[in-house]
Amino acid sequence: MYRQFQQISRIQDILSTFVGNKIMLKLQKQTLRLRRALLANLGLMMCIPLCILASFLGYASVSPANVVIYVIVMWLGHFVLVSFIYLNWNLRFKDASLTVIQMVWSIAGLSGLMYIMNDIRISLMMACLLVMAFGLFRLSFQALQGIMVYTVGCYLTVLYCLQEFGHQEINVGAEFFTFVGFILVLAGFVFMGAEAGYLRQILSERHRELKGAISHIEDLAITDELTGLFNRRNLLSVLTQQRALSNRSRYGFTVCYLDLDYFKEVNDQYGHPVGDKVLKGFSKLITDNLREVDVGARIGGEEFVLVLADTRLLAAKKVCERMAQNWRDSAFIEAPGLTFTFSGGITEYKSPETIEQVLERADVLMYEAKHNGRDCLIMDDQDMQVPLDLDVMP
Image (cartoon, rainbow, N blue to C red; front, side, top):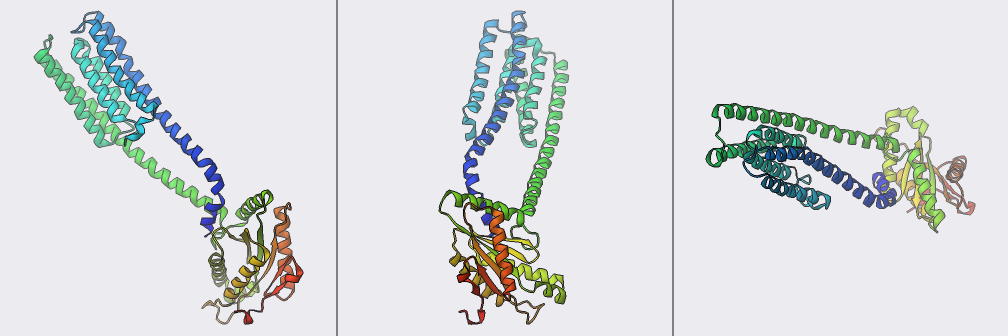
């Protein structure tokens, strides 16, 4: 219950920030994807002036105008892919970064340039390595293997087309060593990608562990370790929220300060392990008798505080009476024949008093119940004092 209330008590903050945070996270991811795509394309673009210059110097098998047209077509494809990311259309795909699609298009475009650029083909092969680097930290080992096979296939196709349709005679020996070296470098990128994938997996696991540790630390910061109820720190946070609601509207809440009677005797007679079990039993009684919007907290020793949301004194009185009856009926095997009771002070928040004032008043009422013989409840209105004669309660 206390975890559920923790979520409910924060619902307004979550609702007010959820949409904004979600949009911000989406924008951050999209910005990163767009930045990576632009940087990769800028890296490839550095090859374009070289190809155009080479075409004017006669190193291309086609005219410079045709080289320019080919380059324009190639970059129109890149522009479309970058536009997909810019317009958020990429979110329709499983891989929102469009990594494989961009790599396939780039390698196909570079392969076409290899075919028409003759002697500067090796420079364009190095550009293929830049494309492999683009997918190094995004693709799995299997995906990188697929891209490697695709790249090698494109290169072999270029060699075949040059042999069959080109105007350049191929030196088979030189091409063999170039081809083997190209494959070895590509394989090196693939294995580097495997290592990068392994590191990504480790980082992902560490991230999950860190999130779990942070969640556990947050729980420890707001809950009592023994009972699982809220601790004093989070109780004050809840009371602050309740006070703010009450000050803004007719909303009211009641604070019940409860203390277990003769608890020291339980520890002295049966030992602290039994005392801890009694505290856990009382905490379970609290969670079983409160609504999800109510809060139970242990603030020290055998002292507990209930915050009953949108509740008046008479309703709070009935809740505490029911709890008192159930607690009196409780039994522990380790402490046979022991009767369990508690004393409490019940007060309602009175705007615009402080949280400290309402807690102090409830504390004073609880001690008054102790002085009146214990096993009773004292409320603000003395005419509503409720001695707990539980033997006659239904």
